[in-house]
Image (cartoon, rainbow, N blue to C red; front, side, top):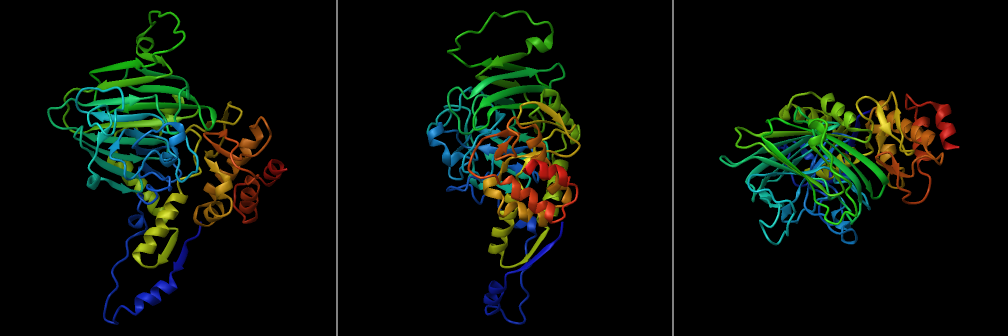
Length: 459
C-alpha cells in the first residue's frame, strides 16, 4: 500500500483570490472526520449510515422500512434518510448496489409492552417501529447513534470485522426488552424464508439460522448473540398462521431442546426487567454454522467493551482513509473521503475466524487466507479494484484475488464469480469481469497470488 497525495489545484487558485497573505487557512478535518456516512442515503444512492469496519462481515445499520418487493428499490440499503420511523437494527447490508437482499437479524429495543408487528409508520404506537429524533442522529465510520422517541431509548452501534455491538440506554423505571424479528428482510416477499430456527442456550447465548431464496438462492445465515445483562424471561414464537403441516410436538430432551423454535415466521422477545446502566448486545454472523457464529463472536474479545470496539474501528478507518492525502476545500474533501469510505466497505469478509467458509457449491471449505465475497464485479472491475491495489496492502488484495480463485475451484460450473455474495452466485449482469481483476493485481506485482492457479482459474 502506498500513500497517495492529491492537490485540487483549481480550487486552490480560486481560494487564493479570496484570502490575504496574512490570513492563516483553517485547519482541515482529518480524513476520518471528513467522511459523512449520510451521503447517498437519500435519492437512489442506496447507502446505509450504520456501523461497519473496513470490509467488515457485519454491516450494522438502522432499517427504516421493508417495502413489498416491487416497491423496494429505494430501500435497497434498508434506510431512507427522510423516513420518519426506524424498525430496528439489522446486521447485513449492501452499499450502493442496484439490486438488494440481506437485512438479517433485525433487533429493536423496547421499553414497554412487546408489540410483535412493525405497525404503520403513519400511526405511532401501532407496532414496534419507533419515531426518532432526526437531530439526534450521529454517523461516523464505525459508529452510529440515534434517540428513539417512542421507546425513549438511546441506541448506539459499533462494529468489528465479524461482530456488531449495540449499546441501549433505557428510560429509568421502564423494563428493558429486546425484540428479534427473524421474518423480514430487504427486498422481501412472501415465502422468501425457507426455514429458520432460534435457540436459547443455558448460558443465555442466543443462536439461530435462516435460509432464504432471495437474490442468492439458498443463502444460509447463522448468528450468535449475547447480552451484558442476565435474562429474566423470554418468548419464542412462530407467527406463521397458514403452515400446511407442523408435525407432532414432542417433549424436549434437555433445556436446549425446549428453548428453541423452528419455522418460517419466527420472532423472539428477551426480557431483562429493570436494569441499571445500558444494555449491550453483541452479535456475530456466519455462513457456516451456529458454532462458527459463536467463534466469530468470541474472536474479537469476550467482553462487552463498546468503547474499545469503537476505538479499534476508528483506528482501522483512520489508517485506511489515510492512504489518500488531498489538499482541497472541505466540501471537496468530504466528497472524496466519503467516496473512499464507501469503496472500502466491499468486497466484504466472508470467511469465519477459523478459516471456514461456504462456497458456491453450498459446501463448507477451509482456507488459510481471509475469504471475501460481495463481488459486484460488473460495477467494480474498472475503478474500485484498481484503486484498491493502490490504497490497500498486498495482503488485502491477495485475499480478494485468492477468494475469486477459490470460488472458481469449487464452483459447480467451474467459473469465476460473476456477481456473488455470501459465497453464492446471483448470475447478475453480463461479462466475466473477475478476469481483469485478477490480471491487474498479478501484473502489478501484488504478492501472495499463485500465478499458475490464477491462470488456470481464468482459462
